[in-house]
Length: 310
Image (cartoon, rainbow, N blue to C red; front, top):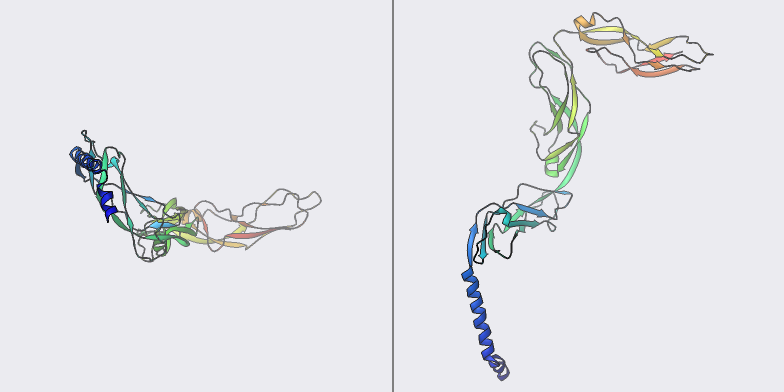
């Protein structure tokens, strides 16, 4: 006990002077500093967000900051005077997991003139959703077809695309939809159309990405479309080996049914194939080739024919 009392009263004048000096310095700080409140909005920056995760919802801004302006010259405080951050390194990336309360850190960009005392909110709720992807079919929404038009089935440049995004949104996507509008004039559709991710009810699903994000849509439209069976004309190019002769050229099938405007269809007597090369051939040449269809003509049920050069 004597030792403790001796320690307390040892050099007591010096210790008393130190306490008085600290008190005077603190009083000087209070006199030269004033507590104020900044009511601007400070966006919260995210640190250490996992690469395979998305933040569900929007992060609240910091909306009220109490601070001390130090010194005789009061600094001008703006949104650029503060930074607000959260660290997501400890937040689990699990689908359906409950929100996690994360502390908000607010700092001043000029610590010598401004000191942060308090701010709101001091914590926010954060939920992370894993990254997911899947392949979905492409479908075409033609809207309301004007009366009097005969509209063929749409043809798209790609039957399926990949949708990527937060898992809770990706699971809702049923298709990638290309929306086109058919004009009463009956002009054929042949254009690149942006795709929209839609659910089973046709509602757009936000916050996901489609790859590719667009496709070419072709729709043949006519007011008087007719069909007709026409013979297939096999076309060859080049000449065979000098020691060989072409005995005959055939196509299978012999006839194809095509569709076009009645006036155009009346001018056709045959449908050519794309050329088959027999240059330098010494034996039979057999090739599956597409039809060389004139503009405005569509083949029904046939995409290729087999050409045989004997």
